[in-house]
Image (cartoon, rainbow, N blue to C red; front, side):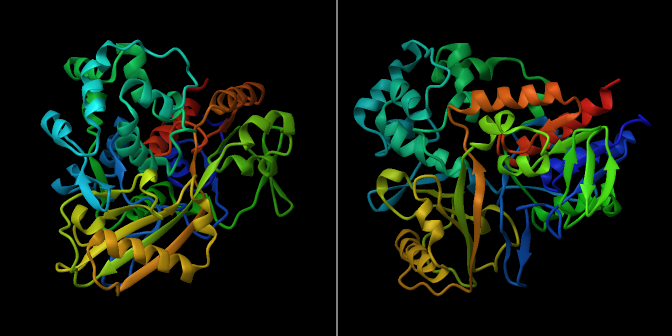
Length: 449
């Protein structure tokens, strides 16, 4: 242990989680962060009236590691599960919101899907499984369920997670659980039924799939991690690069040597961080695409629009609107807006409408206001809070190039023992994915002889 010393690049949730578990194991480390603060895009704000997020708005307890982290941080920050309204999801179709089916009866009666595709679902368990690992999501869904399911269920779903394009996203890498349902069980429907009957491990039981936040905002999770790992172990406004000789960090002319390096930044940051890696080493990594997204926080002290009894609404690309979706934050979590008010998060841009994210703020606000008024049942649009946050590299896109990217990462890590290329370029883009990755990397280093 005394020979190990770890550099962690990035004080986002991945880096802080890794640092937390290294600290517990007694392994020295330094976190290098370019910004003046920790948490990356995971930031919470309040103006005294509204409590809102400027990055991720919520997460899903999809991995046991996330549940374990909150258990470990008990008393430092408090997990907040979404209200029952989170079960209901709305889809915009032909000028109105329609609930996404949650059971057999609603799936049969919903106007979202064509009669032909409803019958196709009955035959879905009998279709042959695919044999192309790089089949994109659109092809997979049309093959097994039909085009209307793609347009009004899967397309808005993928917009909500990746702000992506189903014609680009490859399920093997972006939605491995969905991909494995077909590959392991031969069917989505049959696989879901069979999987539900299988005995659940302790970790399966921890991964409840419930929507969560943190009381007081997600940033309180960041504050708790920083407090636990020690603020003195984080160097802010820090631009570093590493030489190949035992990972020597060079910062403002000073040098410090580490046995291990965990990089959690974007793919595009790697050439500058690690100049000893050649262009040919990195070419299959740095081509990774990121969705460009603008996040709008909108608040009303007095809400006079539609009833807020859902997680929110997603807008299928086929409906040709400008916004990707609206989250009803004040119906999900407590104390986000005044009792008679409403707090919302609206997303704009994504892979297919990135040009909207390049518009001046006044023009983009006008576009958002038009869609919001129509969809949320308002005669006038006079919010008490209307703030935009721009993210040029918001969400990594897992397409058919993922196989080559993952192979390149594996090869680099094999040739440069102790170097880990992590972050959202692999292993998923959700909060739980990042926590799982950070903990696993820390434990790998802890358990190395």
